[in-house]
Image (cartoon, rainbow, N blue to C red):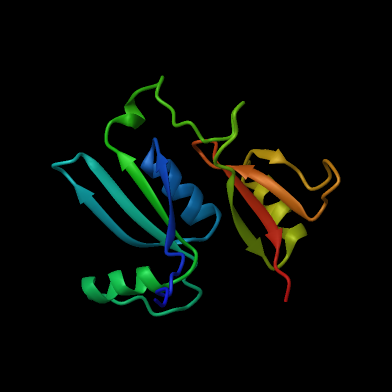
Length: 155
């Protein structure tokens, strides 16, 4: 029996405050909001983000879903309504004592310029390039504390 062809579709992160997360991923990192679906009956929203890089994103909902399913590097943010109003609420990012989930990685064409830009935007770092033995990577934190690795693109 032949195995079907599998392809990685997207990564989903649960976020406490959707507006803060959209600001971080769209304004600061430059992703584009491709699709937002609100589900009042379930009290949650799904937002799909991409570095579209000039690609034509279809307007037709069916074609857009196909585009999302076949485009690499899609990030899905899932927001459960009301979490942003609870000061004690947080998601376990998987990077605590027992580990588990690690990070997402985003590549940049000019690593030094990206680090300088992130500093000017007051983005918190988990690991700066000058820390440790790996000067060609950095880890920043998104609004929920998820690790985002910044790496240099290799042509």
